[in-house]
Length: 106
Image (tube, rainbow, N blue to C red; front, side, top):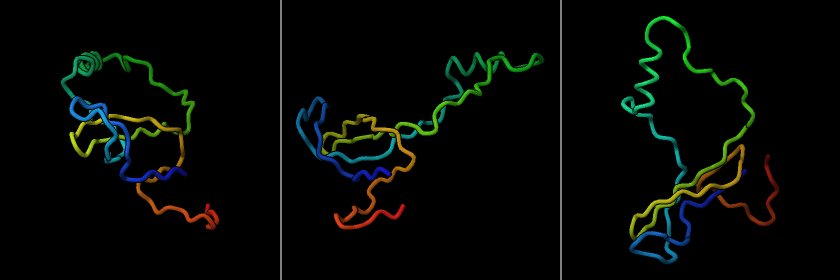
């Protein structure tokens, strides 16, 4: 279980800052694919009509988890960057912190 705070003080690579500032942390999610991109248009045209599947359907899944990608946004200049952290099954953003003498519940 990985628990990440919602704010993080780290270096900003933006053109304005170039110093350590407070960053807002969120989890990166893949955006919806565009219907008008060249690859999508080509695939849709190939799929039309008779003849079945045009590209091989992937079945050999190897990994159980994905790497967590954090999206850091500078509070001063609003420059955004991504930070990849380790693989984990459970991920929590801004959860309660464990006390030193507390025993794990999982």
